Length: 185
Image: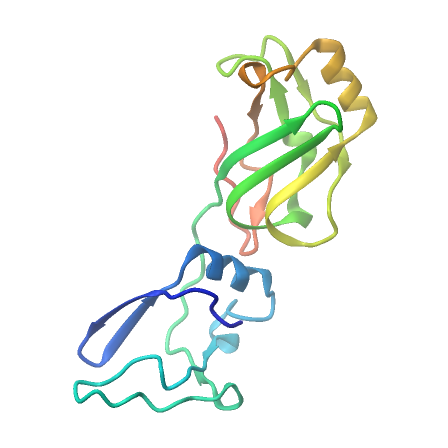
C-alpha cells in the first residue's frame, strides 16, 4: 500500500518514527493480507524519504526487496461512531466510524433509533436490512428493511434531526482486528 499523504516524521539519531495519517491507516486496514502481523509487515521507500546530516539521500529500497518490520504492535483501539445520517424517504442509515470496520461483523439488530437522547420512550429496534458486500470500510450505508422503515414512520421516530438518536452496544460492529466498537451507553 503506497501512502497517499505526507506523514509526520520525528527522528532521534538513527531511529525515524513515522506517524501515518488516518486515511493511510484506513487504507492499510482495508488490505487484509498486509500489516496484520509481523510476518506480513514490510516497507519499501524511495531515496526521497530522508537525508542524512550531510544532505545525502537514503538508499532506495524497492518493493521487491522490502524490509521487514522489527516489531509489530496489534491494533487494540476500539472504533468509535463519529456520526450518522438517516434518510426517512429512502430508509438509508449511514454510519461513519473513525476507522475501518469489518462490515461482516455488523449486527443491525443491535441498533436502536429513538426520539430522545436520554431515554427510549419512543424507539425502534432494527430487525434487519442490507449493506454493501465490501468488507472493510469506515463509512457504511445500510438500507433498512421495509418492516423497520414502516415502524419508524408509524412511531414518528427520526422525523427531523432533533428527534433522531442512535443507541447501540459494543456488539454493533468490530474493526478488522476484532476490537468491538465503543458503545453509546
